[in-house]
Amino acid sequence: MLLDIKENPRLKKQLNAEAYVSWIATARMKAKLSKPYTFADGETHAPMLLPEGEIYSELGDMIEELYVPKGE
Image: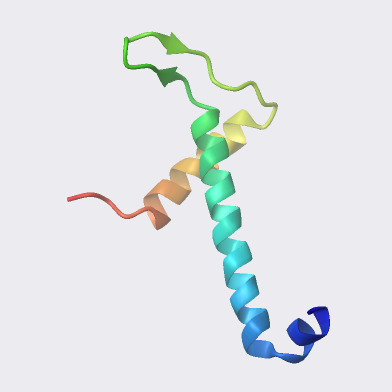
């Protein structure tokens, strides 16, 4: 399989695109997990404690603005 990827530029581009989308999805979820969460009963809990929490939060805001479709 690795030889196929190396020899097929189209497959290589497709896998690169899938890796990029996966990275965006991961960064977006980390950003969501670094913000306080309010449950249906109104109780709010602190975010997941990560040393990179502020970075994930800023990155998540950019991803939301640039890549996530807005509902109309």
